[in-house]
Image (cartoon, rainbow over all chains, first blue to last red; front, side):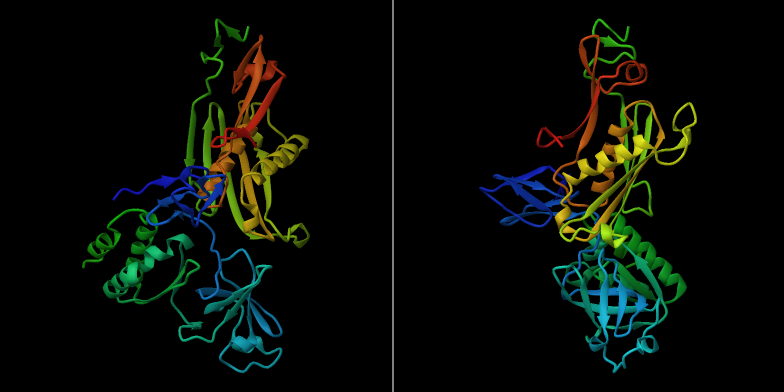
Length: 217
Length: 190
């Protein structure tokens, strides 16, 4: 299967046979690519899977954030998005009195949170009231391109289970391109190496098999 | 005599460009980057963002602000250039920002800014065109949605002949030069 890489402004289809999907735009009857990426024109929609790009926050995403500031009734969290994200005291599993936010989560703490909403002014609301949400203790945080996250997870989490199984590490992949890893030092280094290979070769075919082979599977 | 029998001093035809080399993704700390060599021009461009626009009064509630910064390093020309912004670089930065604003889907990132840093490391006429072309590649490398990949080229008239991409002596002696940013896919100017 050959994958076609398109540049912004490349013609990727026409309105007679296709509909414009993600990473594309239309002008008249022609559909153009808006981003540098891999063309996907299977089905009725034609879309471009970007090779890079900033994290575009959506409600329901689970992300890894770093606390930037403790406010009176909220925490300001850096979730690798271009907009500020707020975690209100009402959205944490503990009862927090006004002005006591720093007793629970301090600046530079790493937390796993879900995005509950992104409003029109692009202010992001976060919540910690879900099963996977917690304050992260120990381990390493790795930053990858947010557009490569689906490749690290794989179809039906296939890549994720290969990585976990062969390196015996705990890991959590945030939709914002941050990965938390915890385990023995050698295993963590092997895992980071594998993730870097996935990031670099994400556009190639048969990656899961190659990674399994690399990790000794 | 800058042109003789339809051949220019450096052996090029009137519509021939100097050799171009483009490399994307050269800086790891930037979202997108590009190193471009165009004849004797050596340009490095880096894109940071979209990120929260600071100071906040420059934020636009409906679109991203593109902040291009063109700078020639002191050793880029044979006579040392005084470092820091000057009238010329401020003007080129403004024109480059406006040319890029026409192609980037700024409406997708309200209240943010996209910083485009263009550093001219070596100059041999046509640095603003090389800078814009490098900035476009860096923006594409950063994954920023764009209508097109803009390119720019200078055009001038030497002894009654229209020539493209003026270099060296042509640029020094000929004052009627028009740098033109273009949308290659639409075949029109920015």
